[in-house]
Length: 402
Image (cartoon, rainbow, N blue to C red; front, side, top):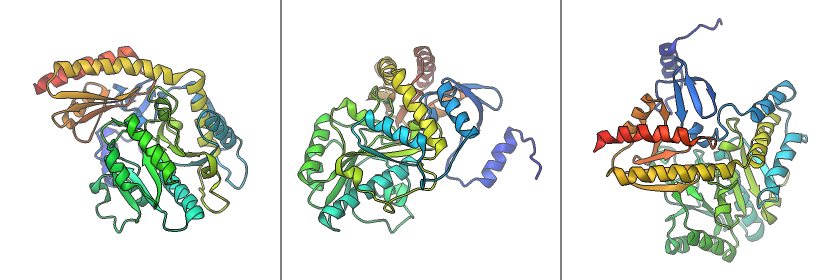
């Protein structure tokens, strides 16, 4: 079939006709990008403060990542996990030697990584204690994915509606409430799963004392402490991994999003006996860990470590946070700034969807979560000048809401 040259209206019309309606899309599509800027089909430029939902942390023109992708496209994109894959081994070594972990497993997405982490924790509990120790305790306001199991540990009823019956053995504790956490964890707990900073939940950082209690309970009841760092990991908080801000290591950690800078990849990292639970046939993946994904991810991690990108994110994030606090001081509808590094949220007293749309018209991509939290997750290479420009425009938009 001959490909037709479609204009903007045709792309949007055909998209609405042929794509399932899982997203409320803006009438824009992008054709190019550089640094922290995206370019749409009409040549308009947008400074991106969403970075593909915390994915393109090195921006849109990183030479090291691009060259790694080209190299793999010209040699091998995929073989299979029945054979050793050099880039997979090298990436696993790189992540383990720069974290708490002993071993890694690679899949294709964050949801898949969390699904595997649940399986890992339950399998270890089953092998040691039998089938009754199977409960997974997650947190209120969390988000862990869209599969049936990860929906069961995601605190959003609208996401789960219509997909029942749901898997059993999942419970919720109130985030940062020590007493409530203690009431939910017990002899049948196989794992406690926590986002060090809840992204979709409204940019809520975990309290140090709460994390200490979670670690204490995981030791007391011999269950896994899992950190979901899919959104907050990979340099975003000012450290390579968010848990480093707290000094409390997990047993298992999941990664995705920024790990591939746009190439789909997820990872499970584990230490101790958790690292040795999976045996041949216990878990697997067709595409996970292939040459393209792990080659790109290896370039991402090396770029972040060798150029100290996390430290840059910390410095720029502190500057950004100070500018957002200026907005809180100036505008009544802005009530609080939360987060760390370049994962920041501005709490509003009014819904933020229209603000997001107005900023898009001005050439700035921002996001709203939990209806009233403007979320800022730009590429970690965002500049202070770009932040200043966005803040100036955001103040002008918020001025209409006084």
